[in-house]
Image (tube, rainbow, N blue to C red; front, side):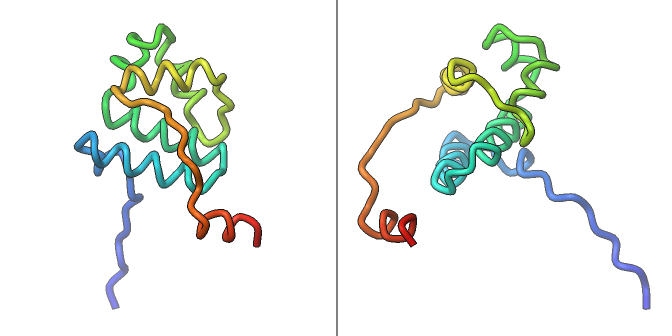
Length: 105
């Protein structure tokens, strides 16, 4: 039997439209894990071009990579700058009853 060759899945390769990006980030936010949200922002930044985004945000590419990794802990101001540079906005909406029940369990 021949060996099966696998490759690592890269979400950045599948974030082509603003709608894709918004849905991906919404899913990470819904999960509620700060590390996942940071990593998702990193994936989005790579999809859009980390160097260009870093310039818009006013950070070095290396610092932005580090901040937007699963191990990174970006400041809230950095998150807002990244969202703005990506053409996205942060907004709050009431949780649905289903989501509240799921979080309480």
